[in-house]
Amino acid sequence: MEINAKKFISIMEVNFGHKVIDTPIGEGIVLDPFLAFIYSSITGAGYLDNPLYPFTVKGLTKLFYNAMDYKFVTGLFDNTTLKNTPCQLAKAKEYLFSSKKIIIPVEFSTELELQSKLKKLIKASADPATNYIIQRIEISKKGNGMEPFMEYLTCEIVKEEGFIVENQIPLTHSTGSPDFGGYRLKDATLIIPNKIHLLELSLLRLGVEKGFKKEDRDWLLVGEAKTSTNEVKKQLDKYLKTGLFNEGLEINPSKLKSASSYTNLLTIGDDYRIKVIRKEENRDYVDPEKQCQYIEWLRNYVKYYLLANLTNDEFIAYYLKITKHPISSQEDVISFVNKLSYKEIIDTIKGVIKNGTIK
Image (cartoon, rainbow, N blue to C red; front, side):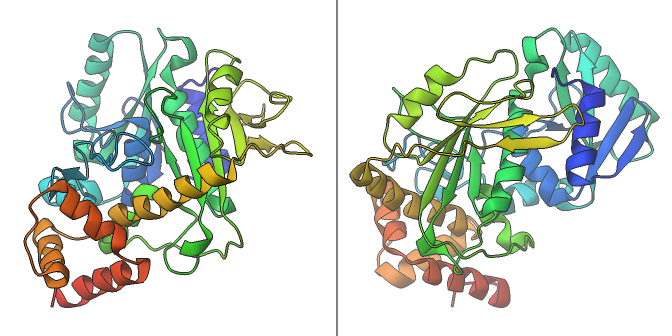
């Protein structure tokens, strides 16, 4: 299945019940601003604040270059400073969380054609342009450039199984970045929400409300998405051979029957419903010692997204309150955060929301 604008609308409506509305350049899907923010961060779809370069969250909220390491990418943190957190982005661009958003899938062959359509939308619409988010469908590309959309669908479906989910997960330079990761962390159960996108942990202060699901064991899932080819085995092999993951997931809208001999499959049926086809017997590729080290890193990894609910001034005040000395390096930040418990972080966020500052 090659996903075009019409199929995009059907997939979003059939699977998630999103409202469909007409716009001057075609049908669109209505999302609340929090879901829209997550959508943009995964797919790269842009808010129409500029027809030449619509603003996207994608790439702004990364954390580390590699797994089991603590070297910051310029994203949530810039050296020792909180930078592109949702709270800070919301101050800089008030439209992000101000109203419902309309995602419009726009087919085009050239950038000039796309810009012409976007200018038409801005001119003809009574709504503010920033209420629109543009999903690029590049019909000149194989698969229409829709692999990130498949990553989004996978996150939406798999999170309901009790996973914290994200796309383009950090692993290692030699292994690459898997398109999808899902983490069940039993130690986090009933302390931090699961069934959630990782980035949503940094949206708690802005009003995101998520539930909890008790987990009895750690379980890790890795996935690779393709839209223009059926061949994902080679890349999934590399991920599974790390010994870190319990399951592999092929993500492909066109492969309807089964995955490879050892992995599960997420695909889209002729009725536009997303299907997860699991093997009756799943091989376990885990190296217990390596996975234990990875899970320890993951437990710390999510702490940074929770702390992104604080402003930079609040984070500095919290650091001073605990350590009694100022931050002087990335190592100071990392040592501090990794020693915190989930409860300490959650209590701090609650205190900031209630009192407005660190006491």
